Amino acid sequence: RKFTKPSTEGLGDEESELFCGSLSWDATEDDIFNLFSEFGKVSNVKLIKDYEGRSRGRAFVKFETPDDAAAGLVVNGQEHMGR
Image (cartoon, rainbow, N blue to C red):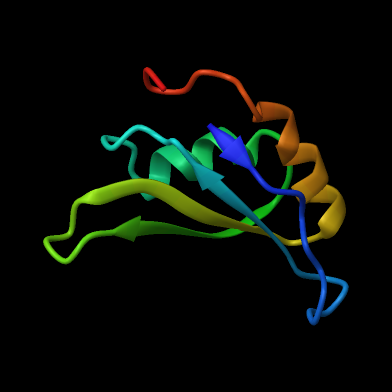
């Protein structure tokens, strides 16, 4: 799994989002929400899907605060659902 640092450029102080790549293609938005909600308040998960509705193994996870997003980086490099 690969993650980028939280970005607040152009956003209000209350917003922060992580890009997550190399996720299991079987992972659902609920799986990703549950993974990250241990580390901060997740406000939204957007799983990227192909035109047939299948996961592309990437997602955006929006946290309520930049601090929550920074705490979510702890899962970077950890295995989740086999990836």
